[in-house]
Length: 108
Image 1 (spheres, rainbow, N blue to C red):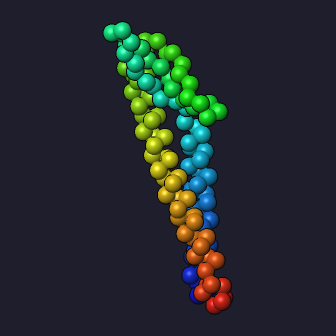
Image 2: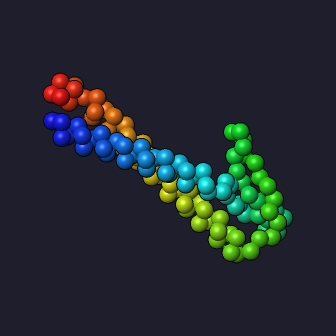
Image 3: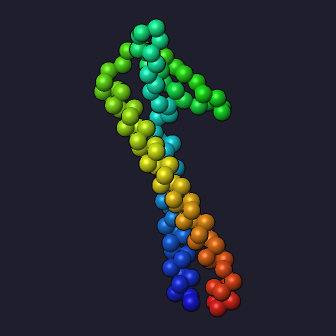
């Protein structure tokens, strides 16, 4: 049973390292999403982001297709890292419960 406990502890350490890496990656991604608004027949671009729980719009003016593409990639990366972070948090919860299980504590 010590082998199983050792494997679980090692997995827990790896999961904690992954969580920290995902959080750092999320913090490195620039905040906000480009939003296209059509007002009176004209197209305007805004950077939408949250500040202190409120949604803020910042006018960006005319932006190039490359910049729009860059913000779309940032949006995809943010979604990817949030999903990975959610999965790793579930894994951490499972591993912590498994390590604190009565069967493992009584057999070691």
